[in-house]
Image (cartoon, rainbow, N blue to C red):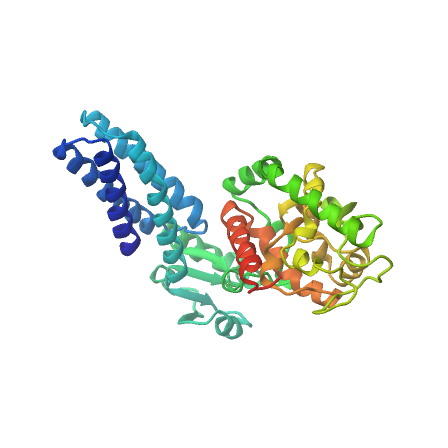
Length: 398
């Protein structure tokens, strides 16, 4: 956090000074005092973030703390009757938020915990999968407080014999977590055999976000309309003029609550073409439409599905009824993905290549279940940035 805090302090002071100079002010003492407060605030934010044990949502956490501290700094300057430039402070705020987000994200990725796993039949395998220096504790009387996090196996350790020791460890500040939860965090996916709907015990922030998500979906569609409407009209006219016939393609997909819905897309293949996976140079694709598919512009009509409440911007990608039925028969956990609205893009989309079979779809399910358990603004923003990176650079899963 030191480097982002230092960069934030310098950039904020530079921005504030430029605003003051443009206003032709010469009260250098007030400028120095304001810059001093701006320089101190990033280090205060860094100390607060570093002191918090839970950093599961670094984006939200760092943004909220930074804004609170930033506003407190403004209050302090105002209380001291220091003439300040509110427009300059407003311009400096995004710098503070951005740098603290970078710092918190780096801190989360580089954090090292002292881990121990309580002995059970699969403890050796679990420690190897997780990796790193992990101690295996076999004695019930071991001092669990020597570790930051204790990994347990529910079937083995949810017993009266272990309950007292685990409770005492939690009271001392040691986190107690199922071993597969740490593995999920490392891999970014959930092992279906260890998944249960009871695991979807959302925190308050996640509950509020899931309620807000529908509003954000509609708001983003409305904001995108000035660009999407003319662009969509051009694509519609291009396909119509090139190949005749309907420009839209309708597919029946499985959606929220297991209900079927009609998903809209621009038709990018020639009339009468058979379905199935496409490859590079596929002659079924209309001229120029390969670029539309790569940029996912063929999915613009799905904004209508979002307005209808059938889809979201981000969520598990809806699949065909044939694949959905096959996957539902292969594993009961597959139906859990119907607990949220399907999305135009999702965690599985940016992590795993195209899945054309039921078996491949089950591998993608691991990422969808991870999204279900950890749904948050932070994760949605990461998915959005990864999607944009894939569209711009062509690198990453599609």
